[in-house]
Length: 426
Ligand SMILES: [Zn+2]
Image 1 (cartoon, rainbow, N blue to C red):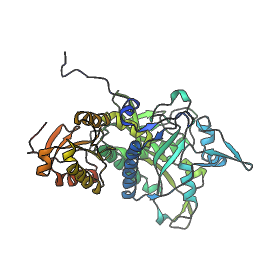
Image 2: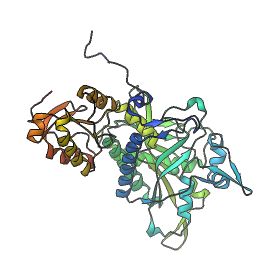
Image 3: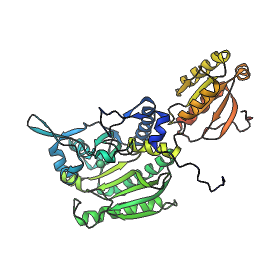
Image 4: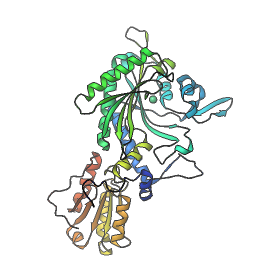
């Protein structure tokens, strides 16, 4: 018997959803864990990249680009080679040098900071990149977009004075919480990931205690007005420093972290990163690693599972699918589709085949809006719309559709402001 407690069918995995949505593909000759982003998947990723860049820009981050590989010596200096070599791709020999694919973007950003002298007045400097990094995962653990060998990360490194740590950590945490709210990923708790007693960490116990306390103080302040708990976890830190992770629970109850803020006294020492103080001396800079929207691969997998493929308007590969009931409405449907496309919306026009089959195809692809133009609508300049996620069906004026959708897209809103009084039609 179907009751309110009936959990219904189990949630689909993002790889199962991909069968209907055609977002990514794998190819044996390309290799496992190296997904190819098909056009519909690339739409979602590019929207997320634009979102990440908007947040970075608002927070005063400066865009940079850096190469995906470097001499092995760079990662020996950063400590990655010592702590992380088993997760890195084997090195490549070239002209008597050894090069490796980077396991993290931080050393390149440290080198960008070091390319120039900085005064205390220049700080903080925040460098942002949508950067690719690599993990030599064993083929047995690879899975769709959630475990991959190339990770495309929304990555920022803040270089600041010690007296700027609290403000910068707070700014990063606030932006990460806002990003989760826009994405519709509910944060379960914020985790302060600390070191444990093992030897797998760089830096002194004093540095660690200081960094953990700085993160704790900033997190308590930001979380004071919210219901979110701060949970401390030993042994979850990065090897170079403690971090704050925003923990999200997926459809199966598993925890994962998308956004992170990490405090690092270590890399600045290893790379001898300094600034000139007011007194003219050289002082050590502090490095904060911040990831807001997270890894593109992982966040797309998480969003697909969270929404079961039916993404909010701003992320949907097809935002409106326009269907004329018959050939007589073709001209009206084409004109509506052109209208939507000029408002920079992603529109699809399907004219061939039975209406029932075309509607089923829209639903299977999880198009955001199904817009049907029949004889009556064509005559009145109207369109029948179905917003499946919102459970809304109604008739709206053709000329009002583009502004309604464009507004929701521009503001990355989860709901379109449909006219309430519109009579529902089937
Ligand atoms: Zn980093």
